[in-house]
Structures are given as C-alpha cells and as structure tokens.
Amino acid sequence: MILGELSAGSSDFLHMERFVNIGSPSGFTDLHTTSPQTCPRGDCESFYLCSIEAPDSITIEEYGAQPTFCTQWQMLVHPDQIGEREFDVCTKIDRHAVRVAPTSSSRTVKMLDREGWFLKLSYKGLIGRVDRQLSRVHAISATEVSRAIADAIDQTSLPNNFGILREVYGRVLVFSSATSPNSEWGFVAREPMPYGPLERAAILIPAFSLFSPDLKSPDDPTLLIQLIEKQDRNPEDFLFDDLISPLHDAYFSLLIHFGLQLEAHAQNMLYALDDQLDIIGVVARDAESIDKDFSLMDELGLSKPYTDTKYKRLLRSDYNYQIMHSFMFDFKMGEYLTKPIIRHAGERFSFDQELLEERIRSHNAKYTRQLPADFFPRNWYSYENIVHDRTRRRPYITHESPRYR
Image 1 (cartoon, rainbow, N blue to C red):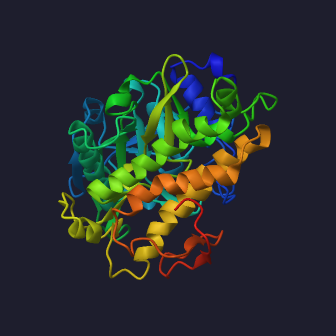
Image 2 (spheres, one colour):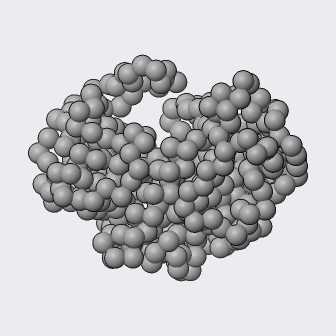
C-alpha cells in the first residue's frame, strides 16, 4: 500500500484492516476466526447479515442512543450464527438484511451503506483466544464508557489529539426457554468517525497497519517506513512526537482524570492523518474493552457514572489488581504496539532504541507520580500464549525491568 495513494473512502480503510495486518502476536488470528465466506483474510468482499424477529416472550433491552437505522431490525445476526438454538423460536428470519464488509476483528463489521457505521456482533465461539458472545454487560459497558469519554472530550479534559469511535447504542435479546435458558444475544453500534477534535481526520490507519506488510502488495514498503521517509525530522523525534507520546498521553490522561484504563494494543488504536498525510492524533475503539478502575476512582475522588455489573471493573481487593495495570500498560500497549513500532523503524533507520525507551520512561514519569505509589507492580506481566479457561485464574508470567515506566 502506497501512503500517497490513500483516500478517505472506506475501501482503503477496509484493505488495511484486512490485508495490511499481520495479526496478533498470539498466532490465533487465523486459527480461530469466522467462516471462509466471512473472514477478514478471505476473498469475499462483503456478505449479508441476517435479521430476526422473536416472539413477545423474548425481552428486548436497549442501552444508549439509538441510531435511526437500528429501527429497521429487531436483531442483526452474523450468518455463521443463525443456526444457533436461540433462533429456533424466531417468527421471521431475513438472510439478506444488510450488506457488510468484514474488519480485522472478524465479528465487527462495517455497513456498506447507512453512513458506514460499524456493528459489533455476538459470536458464540472462539475468535482469536476469546468467545465473543455479546451480552447485556458488554452493551452497558460499551455505551457508558463511550458516553463518559465523549463528555470528557466535550469538557476539553483530554488531549486534543485524542478521539474515540463511540459505541453509542446496544441492543440485547434475553432468551429464557427450555432450549435457551437465560441466553443473551446482542449487538453494539459504533460510529464511523472519531468523536471530538479528530473528527476532521481525512485518513484513519489501524495501528497494526503501520508495521504490517501489505499481503496483496508485499513489495511495498510498510506505511511506517513511508511515513518516516516523508519527514524532515530524525526518526527518533518523529516516533516519539507523533506516534508514541500521543498514545501514552491518552492512556495516562484517561487513567488519572477518569479512572479508565485503555486496552491500547495495535488492534484497538488508530492513527488519524490530515489531508497532507501528517499524523494529527490517536483514536481509540472498542470502548467495551476499557477497564473501569473503581478503587482508583474512589482514591482520586472521581465520579463513577457506571452500572456496577462487575464486568471490566477493577478493585483493590482483586487478586490481580496490580497485575492488570501492568498487563494493560506494559504488555498490551507496550509489547503489542509501542515495541513493534520502535523495532520495525529500527530495522530500516539508525537511531538509539534504548535512548528512545529512556525518553519514553522519563516522559511517563510525570504521570506515574500522580498515581498511587503501588498502582503498578515492581515487575511487569504477560500471559501464556494459550486460550484460557475463564473459570480459572489466569496464569500470568512475571518479567523484570518494565520497558516504558
């Protein structure tokens, strides 16, 4: 993919999502995915979602602000899932309800009309290393966190180079029958463009597309290499000023001022470019995955405008309270995004990578001093490269010498 040929249309964005994407370092991206007819790496450019109508005995729960287009269907279902037993009770099924394109996350799709909104769908079964069934707790967390971050942006309480793709609406069907006792099936609607100052962005580049080869044009330099070559600054300054410090500033600003912890790995972060192809900020997506640190909110005197469903909630009494802070910062944002950017740039350009890491640590020290002294553990933590049994405690791996704090 050639940087200078990027356009604002959805086709280039979808190409980056699907094919300028080496996948998760876990290796599960291609191992556990959707059907060949709907998966991101497949040849299918688009497919249809199914819509269903359920009897009156099924409870419908709604959260957030409903987009107009959502009135057309009771529930939208991924075609791989329409045979699930929950839908045996349906009074009507339309297998060609709306045409969508797959994105990098497989069960999140982009509508090819309706202004290009994204839909995060329920998917019973593994995608990557996690079962992706979407229930009420996911819809509640997605919409409440999105609203809180949007309010913070409105109050200019966050950096002006940060934006979010809000998940503004969720709908969940609650099935309760002999065949599907207490089963919940939902979707979340995500806006197509960033909320806040970055709504002016001309191009959005998924973070993983910076350092991934284009599977369709493998001889093209990566977008990161092309961006560095475009600069009149040295690589270290560009990496720090345009790519790394905005990312870390967003993470710590949300944490210190609102008690929210981004899952800021390469899948969930986007870089916003203007029409001159200069980077103007970072954009978060997947608000549902953001941690709500209730104990930190209490200790910093922050409000908690959230329903306590226990989902994505952190408390000091949790056995892994400190570990989760390290897991999100050191592992997810560090090893899965910051480190690949630096290492990939270092393969082509000469600069002192250790000096850049020290510069990042010094930059982040002004934030860590504002957190409780025991917020982060002394070491840092990752986890085993396996699919974990959620009924058991996750086995974390301890490492010495945190790289970016």
